[in-house]
Amino acid sequence: TSTTASVKYSDGATIIFVDVIEVSNETRSGDSGGPVGYRPNVSKSRFRLIGITFAAPEDASCGFVIKASNILSTFNLTAITSDNIDYK
Image 1 (tube, rainbow, N blue to C red):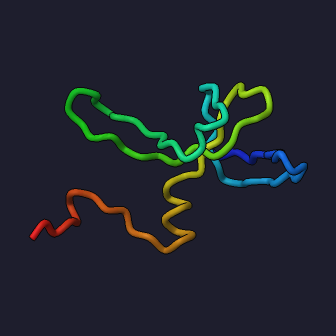
Image 2 (image 1 turned 180 degrees about the vertical axis):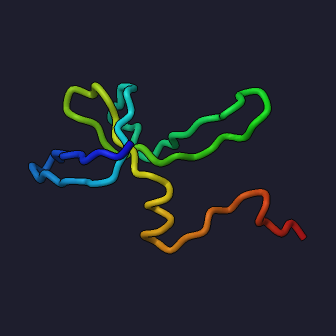
């Protein structure tokens, strides 16, 4: 589900991010840019990217993730999958 995150940066600026995902795992400094995803059937399926970790509250009790779909649409990108790669 989508949430709104208020993120305070070290320079004192606070930025509001909308339509992000809150994840329950602790997120620490250095986790930013890390992929967040899942495997529907761990033994047989590929990793499915949900988004990219970008922030956490000061107590690191959770993390915030920018949705991959928002990254793709904002920058007019197309995801590369094994279905749309020409290996020739």
